[in-house]
Length: 381
Image (cartoon, rainbow, N blue to C red; front, side):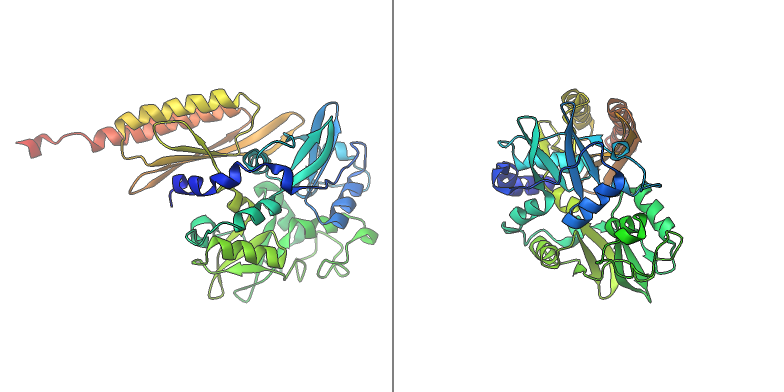
């Protein structure tokens, strides 16, 4: 599936103004307790909360709060992190960049130094569902072989997996079938004091400790599809079930999972280069334009010795960090007619990460290209 074709297909969505899909934000004071934030997110059934402080927009989300150890006394300030913001005249493309880069489910909208709204990933999916996406299949966009657990898995282990892997969904396998899906929302309820546990959690009255097993905790309200179902069917299934995931099943066997992020990754930004280059989640800070320009030049050099390359994709994710220092995860996919090459790096310096990936690409692919296009003296005689 060519990203170039999808880019043209999704272009009208990407250029759409965000004004029609701005919704009410969940706002929190930077001095609030972490337990208050959890209660607010749970009651509103949302993933993100925002605030303005010293001219910056700050975000906290359910996945961040999973790291809490003493939730009753910790201040929310330990979990707040800066996030880019939108104006009311911005486009869906800019909103997707913020959401995918920060791995949130909403992007904040600012007016007069106040957060006046958010653009939610769910509402962007609704816009995508209005297109004819029947030619985009589930097996082309899903995340294969998702991490799974069973009913005997300790909740503490599930929590560590979610925090370290930065994921929000763990399918629970029982008798070779998915019985439920444990989400970051359900685990977060286990951190709250007992009297604050939400009523919607399956088994919440019986489980009070992260030392307990998963058991029946999770949601059995699961969207599902087959590998050959199309994108419209996938999104409709998620919206109908009001879930943030769709399980890809073959008969009863789990093949993969599709989340909001997998769908939003289709709304990529195209760069000007000899080789078609698409970037998902590149932040606007950190000298992003300079980094992109340098990487584009690397691909232009590569195209001269490896003309078979069809396109390149780059995915940039902000994983975690301390105060203003963040860990970035960058993966690059180079597509050729017969093979796809994947180069990945992570670290705190985005420019250095791209330099390391660029070096690996040039060393590996340029060397292969020279060997591939070297004339054989034996065949010429």
